[in-house]
Image 1 (cartoon, rainbow, N blue to C red):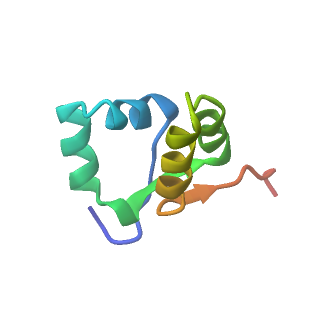
Image 2 (tube, helix red, strand yellow):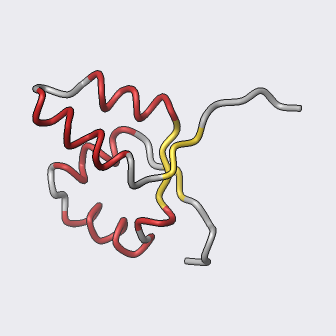
Length: 75
């Protein structure tokens, strides 16, 4: 993967990451953490869906290491 090329992951991909789905883990490893991004809605869905404080804390920690893209209007 080219440096600087971002892959936008949706909620279902991130959930499968936490379920340790081997196919998803392999794909995300190939992409590389620095190339993985989430949109702000996906980040919100993860935080809202946290089952407990421990999970919420883990999501916040992990999201902090990814690029979170905000939604803007087209110019």
